[in-house]
Image (cartoon, rainbow, N blue to C red; front, top):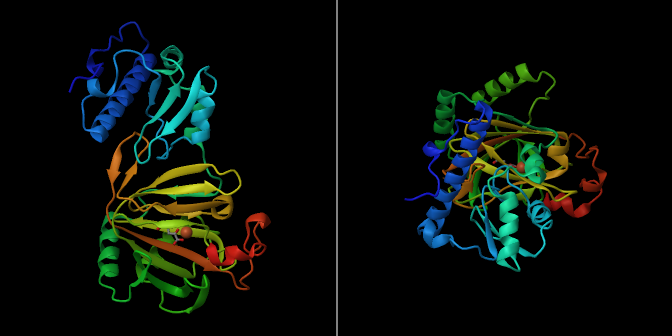
Length: 334
Ligand SMILES: O=C(O)CCC(=O)C(=O)O
Ligand SMILES: [Fe+2]
């Protein structure tokens, strides 16, 4: 497949090592973006891109809607600074978008300024962090993961919830009333050993009281929600097993969306703002778009979510405007 530039043929002799490294990285990203577009559109690059300037610019490597991706507002902020912009067209489920101009000349001007260069206005977006979000990778050893999955798959108490299945340990949970029930089955011993390992890293972490195990067949997810404030305590833990998945977080006050890849065998800790002021979701789809523009097929996934239970079923969080103690309908929906 002919690519406009071959990485190995770039002349870097007049550049410093750092400059050459940056240039090679840029070319690699461009190469990957071309590959992704060709894969999606199932035709060659010369069929896709006009050799003459047109009114349309294709925007790639922004990973819109993907991990580390930018938002519509951020794309608009960059292109609104150019005369002649008539719109931004986002594609659904494809890792590229388009900027539309009123003339080929204004599109060419924007291309000249932006093409092949890092964009100052977007630089921060990749470093966006969520206060209270902690991801511990490789937390569950490979062999332990295998035996946990074996144990869970042989359990006969799975119950269907929407298009996934769940198992409860410790306190039960009623999905209709969104309320915690009575203590039922004890935690499996491997969960206690994982929690002991966590306690060594975070000694102040409370003893978890409720465990929900969920099995997600390929293509399924969990709708956006905040784990019930009134029912559960200030820390939520989630282990990911068998497959990675991209989880979407949305700030309930600003609307900012951040996609984060949860690797297989990782432990996610949500506290403070990440726990209370952002919702989280796993979109029901068969693949995830990653930060490097690659599309990763999903596999079936098992998660273990652990929480403490609020003794008086009343939340005392620092987000009264977002809390179900003040907003009655959240009691049911969250
Ligand atoms: O599957 C996961 O990792 C998270 C599940 C979740 O958000 C929940 O049970 O509240
Ligand atoms: Fe949740």
